[in-house]
Length: 237
Picture 1 (cartoon, rainbow, N blue to C red):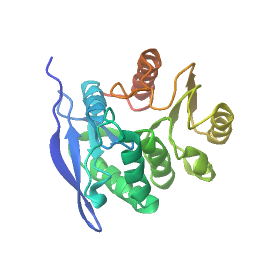
Picture 2: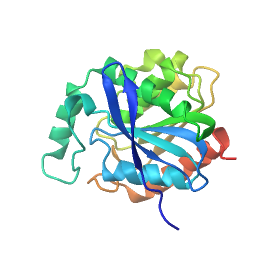
Picture 3: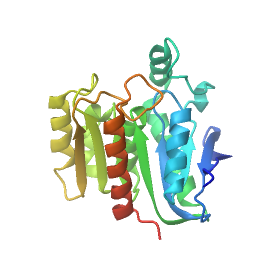
């Protein structure tokens, strides 16, 4: 079976057109998923995950969130990649990036080939951003992988009403066990359907198969749970 290939699109913003990439399922239409990048940008890994989601029946939009910096993806396997990528992420204005991501969700929702609702999924930097987007917009579902900004965003938890799934490794160098429990308490306090899953021995970015911290068994189990969660909460007809 041929893997879905992306097409280049753009998202209107108040400052111009934000570049983005769109994957369609074989059926040509389906529910929409906004995929928000790691600090490494819309990398080969993010593109593969977008194709995986399209294969599962979703229309997937991945915006280039570094567009205002005129920067492309960072090769996560190269020396100094973490420092370079963190430097880019720190140069972004958070509020503006949230606005850009919300614009992308709106553009996805308005597409004729999106049928059956729209959700947001994010990894690392994108995992926290996805949570913030879910607090200020109304996606139908949220999936967050080790959202690095989540500890600073928990005051928004009451505003997140979408069913949500959160993944964390127990050996995360950036989000330790007590912090995961603080996140769990905040995100499960309301009436929304929430799952918080942990993975023994997995570090941050455990899903990224191009990165040194990749944890194959945690990655496979988290992805299985992600697809099952999406099938239940944002089903493909």
